[in-house]
Length: 88
Image (cartoon, one colour):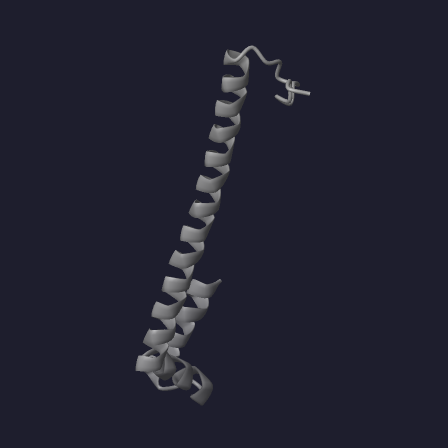
């Protein structure tokens, strides 16, 4: 749908029949401010991806630590359900 609309507007621009709103829209796209806004959005997307990856890495690390603690308890002869407080 978007492609069809773009084709139609391009045709109208070439024929000189585009509305002022259509012309203004594409002129704005060519501005420096528009380019900066586009770059900002791209950087924000990179940041969101990095945050998502960091959260996943933290989750993975937490799972690894839990498995390591479990293995150490088994190695020390503690049951998995044992809380390790044998000194009481």
